Image (tube, rainbow, N blue to C red; front, top):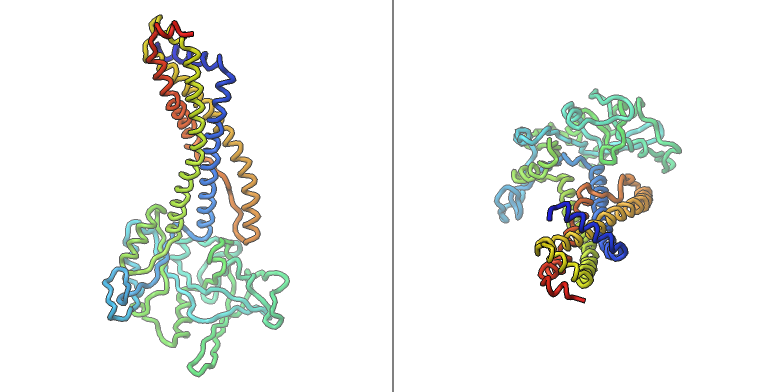
Length: 436
């Protein structure tokens, strides 16, 4: 019996018992739809979580901080409890060592102001984190502006999108009725320090806002950028001495990696040198691991429904053998082999799985779309209440899932029909023809 004869016979047999086949396939539809919906839900939650983490920080970025040597713990160095821990500074030698790594695209020093400072605009005062900016930093991280142009000039500042909302009137202890339009404004930057006697000393700079950054929902929104050399001069004034990078080091280094898949490897390499390194990619890896387990659990819950449907397929095929015993005997009498009979019944069982799988994928996809609309509305409300970014998706069906679900349904059908098919193939043709 060739393939096309087998296919025609299977379709004819399924067509003669439409009601029974449909009722049996319903169980497969429910199980397949459950798998599609639950796995799509877990995938959508994973994508939404990754999006939120992507908004928080660049996934190709590594933050490097000074390490500790000696004491009870010391990454990259032997621990010695008898010795007090000492700081392992970030110096120019380390920066060159990291730049030499093939996966690294850029290394930028992030140096903040080591003292108190505030911006004054008339009767209003505000502030933010004052950070030094270099040409290398501008090229590496591509700061996006809402107004103005990012350029380095003495006494020229670049402010984050939320700095305007930080201003308030200290006399009235309340913010202005409307946020300030800072672009192009001339402001006073007042830096303060205290002597050993507790006397406050002020240093005032007249600065001009040359650019306002676009909103990024990360630390850039609350930063005030000055040229790095000017920030260093202010820090030297605050400390009362010149800074020696070999001794004092840098506060922080930002490492940008070319390939997001290499970030964790670079992070581990920097940690092995004895420094503290952190990247948002490690959180993403942990979250992806959690959601992978969640997908397996959700898929397993749906697979239970498919296993229940498998019992229905096995029962249907067993009843079919009893009803078609004489037909089986006639097939063998006219020359059908045991393999031919086996393939016919396996084909019918697989056909029921195919019908249920296709119906389940369609039903699961439609229900996923309804769930996506409801989930998006709920998550958007939560984001608006908490001040976060609205989600882009709540339920997502991976491209591989429909094919996997249909294939698994066919597999379940064939496995369920295997025992009845073997029984049918092993029937004695003479006894089968005499069967009433």
